[in-house]
Length: 211
Image 1 (cartoon, rainbow, N blue to C red):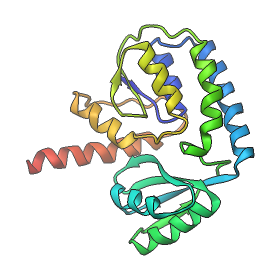
Image 2: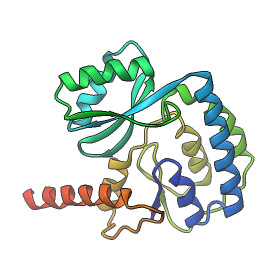
Image 3: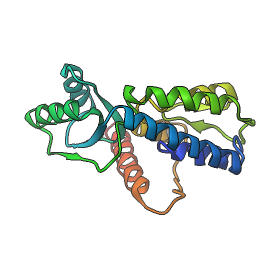
């Protein structure tokens, strides 16, 4: 089984044979260009929220009149919000009042994985639909719903929806563990995902021990 965090989902689709390397590079380039346009149309940002439950963050975001949503469910106690500058600022104040340990502004160019990426989603959809997707060698657990997919049309639809939907990484790893994964190999220049997976595996082991 394979999975990728946000942009990494393209790498996962190369790894399981759905995309050829050259096609993935082209799509990643088109994705970046489309997202940059969306950022210029609607200046926006993101912030990491530490030390609060996902449900609390979701409830606070829902109370803000400006655009701000949960964007990256990274691991328990670490969730990234995304939206307009004012929306993220207002949410940050309320999240601290609700008990967040920290709300850290992120040095990003825009509100990724939020409704503000809709123009980019529409542009990328055309490119994805015009790209050949092959039958995978193993399931890919996709960001949009954290579930395994092997049908190429489903994979395409989920990859398109990913631009405006949250990255459900917590749920993805939990489902992979539930489906039998006990060893995770991170392919990339850093160890960020290893750290997140370690926390999620510890949580899973503790849940099994308590049950």
